[in-house]
Amino acid sequence: MEGKCLCGAITVRTPDKKSIDACHCGMCRRWGGGPALGVSCGSNVQVDGDDKLKVYQSSDWAQRAFCGECGTHIYYKLLPTNEYFVPVGLFQDGIEFEFTEQIFIDRKPSYYEFANQTSNLTEAEIFAKFASIENT
Image (cartoon, rainbow, N blue to C red):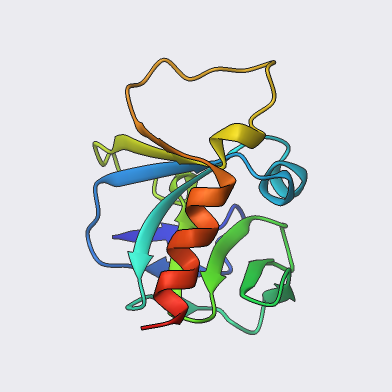
């Protein structure tokens, strides 16, 4: 798949994926004004235009990147696994995605609700999952 930022300075190429997830954690909501809707792309991601890429170390385990020209969010990257989560909005070529999972569901504010049937993981369940990844 190929996606671009708003100004076109950065292009992201990822494996074909059809599943999107929502993150309701406070950082994602602060970063984007609402839940982050992303595609889990694994570690095989190519970013072109990295001279315009700005990377922010948002925690001990993750980075967030955005275009320094237009501000478009480019990725969230888990450092222990090199796994990229790319905003679904970068991909504008008519891909039929399936909304499958919501994380930090216990952190979701009450003022919005998705109607989709998804798996839902709490903050504790996510941190337990990350701990098992780091210990492998």
